Image (cartoon, rainbow, N blue to C red; front, side, top):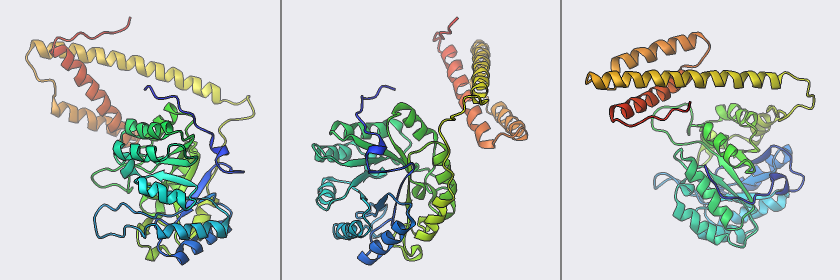
Amino acid sequence: MKTMNLDIQPIQSWIPNIQRPLIISGPCSAESEEQVITTASLLAETGKVDVLRAGIWKPRTRPGSFEGVGSVGLKWLQAAKKETGLPVAVEVANVKHVYEALKHGVDILWLGARTTVNPFSVQEIADALQGVDAIVLVKNPINPDLNLWIGAIERIAKAGITRIGAIHRGFSKYGPSKYRNEPNWQIPIDLMRTLPELPMICDPSHISGNRELLAPVSQKALDLNFHGLMIESHVNPSVALSDAKQQVTPVDFNTIVDNLILRDTTLADNSNPLGELRSEIDRIDDELLSLLAGRMQVSRDIGEFKKANNLTILQAARWEDILQKAIEKGVANGLSKEFIAGYLKSIHLESINQQTKVMNGEGVVVAS
């Protein structure tokens, strides 16, 4: 995937004396001056917060929900910043929000998922940021679209913003799930691979949707070498006006962060087995690719037979039988049902594509 050459400053230069991971915390919504300052003060006392956050304008799914207090909340954040000495961050969704936030001394702006999904909105915000020295974070779009996420980041970068990062807050999915928003970890991993210089922050609150999942989601993000976390905290979550279930008290926030394990990215001792194990992984991957190539050749041969005998490509009963047997065998060998199903569905789709080409008389180029 070809991307722009982005000028991105390392996260260590954003805030003086910052350590990994960067921790952003505060209430989902600013509700009153007392609530904002009390929450901020208690979070600051933990010594584990680098940036305070609070929602000022809340894009709710349906009208009638609490949509934020508006610009008056920025004055409360100013007071919290003065009280704690910590920088503050807010979400902006349009040009007016940008101007208001900057006028009130907000240090970090972030674009929410509902904004990132709309290139017109992102471009208007980017235009408003021309010539501004600000820190801007871009949440993933609601739908799992890596290009849309990258495009939003590129638009902000083209405005001259060099202190820019991404926030992974999960993706919408229809149907039951233990998460509010599916993590789809492969998408932020692909973004980190595509833009390795881009700081990546995880928002476990919006992924989880409930406080019980905050700790494991936060730990997984750190295990994947994310640069930071955004965890919502409220002095009294039970009475919060928005997203009460995913917020924790400052005391519980402190416990969660205190129990996180920060792992090293490299080993100082070179005499370790990691290199040999990775070589073994590479060897197995090569074998898998060779086996898959052989399997696709068999699929093409089957396609030739079906074409000659006027048979349909899809044989639903056989596919269901293959899938169920493979899941049983995979689970028996310590693999998850979800992995086996996803793996086989991808292979099956490629087999169908290969057979379709044969049926349509399209040539299949295979390297010798």
